Length: 318
Image (cartoon, rainbow, N blue to C red):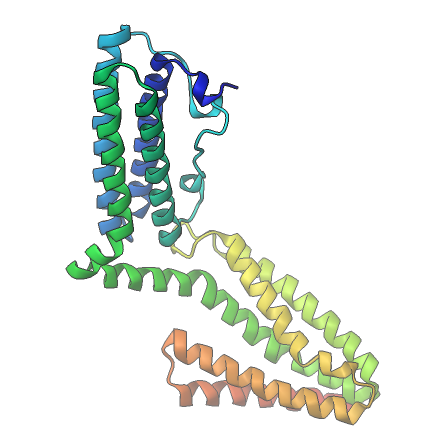
């Protein structure tokens, strides 16, 4: 692996050409993946890719005049400490804020490369071109930084933020809410049935722990296997399955943990208070994210919770 200071002028130009070509491909990948949901951002990346192609042609023409047609085979991986690219474009789902941040970093690193390369260049034409490219990359960095404000003035930002919110609801909130509802409500019956049947806090805790973890695994697998997201746009099954499974487990553990209190009736009273908070939280999430009227949400959730709770107490007491 070579040090940057040991590169020849031909190798520096060859490296710059390969960098511009790779960055253009990355920007085109971003544009293709974001075009459907974020058209304004995609258009920016298409423009940046076109300019990177222009930079590559200018560098290649300079190289051809100075050194002939055969480019040295050298990539950024061959240079010690050279700027690397985080492969966000390989991910199945792209977060718009992460993409914009990476674009800023890419252009900043490219600018620094051209500044250092221009300082080392002895040929006047090479030095001038590298300095011009440093300024161009600086303009790209500014464009990426100011993208939010530019889009906002044209009304596109609100549309893109609405799309990002919708994707977040589809991929995280909905499966998480389904898990929280299942964990908080469906586990009420077995936990309180075991509690009132044995009137033993430890026995109720073990049943609740098993029911919560078992329900979390089941719900996580069900959510993950039910939809690969290719058609529905709900994203990768992994984050949806994890969100659903974790929230299911937490929903059950909420009213299981009070049974670590040795006194049965004290533990049951605390568990009842926890259940009321869980149901209120579910109603709030449904109102905030799913646009369900709060009164309707609280009635539906509380009614369901009371029925399941009563069923568990009735079976455990019989």
